[in-house]
Image (cartoon, rainbow, N blue to C red; front, side):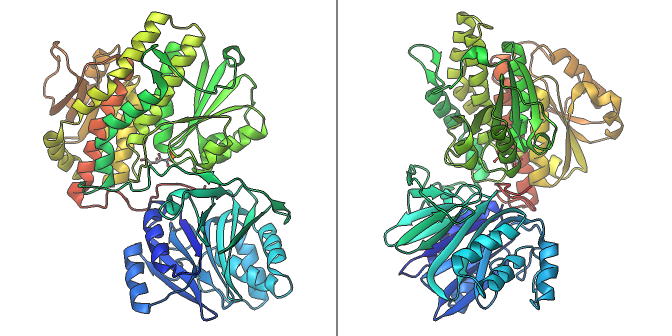
Length: 606
Ligand code: M6R
């Protein structure tokens, strides 16, 4: 959360900082700011709102410089406002910060007692005054070492100094930070995505490290100031120009891309000729694993919940699912024969990363299912399984969810075959089914007209429920999450069989309810539950699959039928109408679909 960009160069940097900040807006978009050094002064422009507004201010104020730092904010301490926007500056230094300084209240008191005056309500401003204070008696490097030791919590920092006309300091603890290399200039970014338009040569700071960037030199140091050598990585340029094209929102494009992203991912893992799933560099023998724990947050967590059913059904492994923010503080008995799988689109989610870090400290087997292969989670896990979706820009996760499910399904199927829990015939049948998944996903996209109208009803309801059993229960949770985050309507996902244990009391005349009931082993039971809500006045949108069998239920409000594919793969299809439903509900309300209120794409704070 929050985005940082910094450039030290001999050329003008302001327009490039602005364009990188636009790329970083997915990390936070409640306020933005920029500071440059010119003529021996720090010039700062900040405003509430989007980078577009900042750009207008910059045109008016005409600030310029060949060194600068910029920031997009997702508020943690202090409401979104131009005063609380970053950078925060004294006469001598200017700071941009991602993360949370947990001891900021104590530090603020100490600094106020020394006479420092605070302008904002942020935790970040303590860093400004600490640096200013330490610089009085220390050189720059020792100042940074001492200041970082004073700070508790998580941070990625970019700092410029009035008296250092071509120098930026970057520092990292918890929040990611990357350095980019250009021709006679260097860059700092909270992720490589922000820097990709300027360079494909990147190094990442590890936790506790800091760096000093000049236009012609970069140095990295550990927390004690010892020099660290860094590898320079070459990033692929593929994702560089990911644009909306003719779509109004990235989310619409990302939903429609799903048949292609599924196909790409299947092609990466499946050897069609030998009918084989390839998981390259799998570092363990199959008999070294007897259980699996799947860990993630939000939508990624929902993909783990679906995968639990697959692992239970197809393998003899014990399988558990955990929310990363819970896992990291639980008193876990770590097991050497357990595979800990971390699922994250961004690969930067603070809770998921901390849970992985805990596993690493306990020396257990770790695997990352990620979209961003250069991310912190990917870099730290023993095994990385990319989901091959390409960039996902919309804050609401769509194609990454299908990609996460797909990779978990491939992992499960491979392990079940290796374990001999399924035979060769079943294994190859599953592979065959996977090869036609993309086509069925494409067929599912053709529901535009119907779903647009339904979106209105959901958008204008007081609240709604999403019900399912088996694999369809986590899909119900995911459908409800999408509606909440995009249309700001209360929605609850529930196991259909649990309704009569309480939530049935919520059903009233006209309440829209989604029932996900593919014709699997749970079908009849779910249809009975559907009937129970219909008889209490609910308007039911039934999502099922095509069949020649009639549906024995009356008064269904609307119905969407997806292709009839294997029961195990149905969640890939039933998800798509729910994504579209949330999209059209938000569109009806006129909300900013790619940047829903209060949220950010990459949640790098706790
Ligand atoms: O990048 P991650 O997959 O780790 O992100 C996890 C969640 O923050 C994310 O899935 C979130 O729930 C989405 N906004 C849901 O659409």
